[in-house]
View 1 (tube, rainbow, N blue to C red):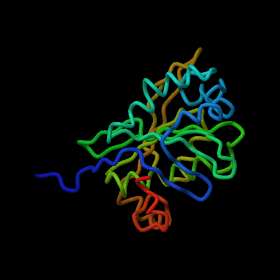
View 2: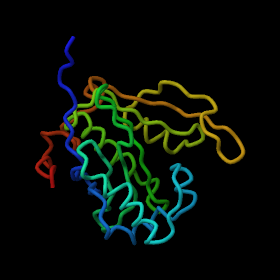
View 3: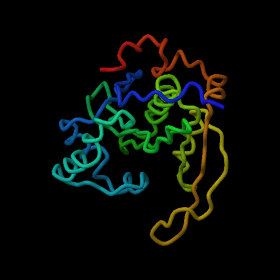
View 4: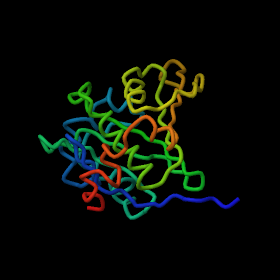
Length: 212
């Protein structure tokens, strides 16, 4: 049987939500990244990434992974910019993209001063909508460590279904920790949310902002 409605890659395009602008990383973001999250040990530990404590280290990250990859149409990584302050307060990405199976997996991080304010949920809902409406994904997955209750709450608020746990999946300094798996199918998401109210939808009032 021929696969219909295959993935249409767009590359990382700007998304605007109520309080955030999600866009490609720029070199001008380096200072606020260092202030807000990428140099914070606990934040990066929870995110599963190393700390970057100097402008030179972040620039190297950009040059070897982030900005250099924007030339690819199947690369999706957004800087989360708070509208009110203009600060880069975190990031969100489809760090895994399986084009053949129309599957994407999301990761995200928010700086400690901006946690508990709904930013992670706001940007994740927008990126999920973008994945379904712009990229035409069939399935979206988000995983978290079993001890990361804050991330679990964000994922559940975004309407994903708990599938189970990979037991003892991560070695965390002195112990093993499980990996919770959550997912949502496009048809399920359309039933749970009115996608036209989300910035990723083609009929949203801000849709003309895509492609900036």
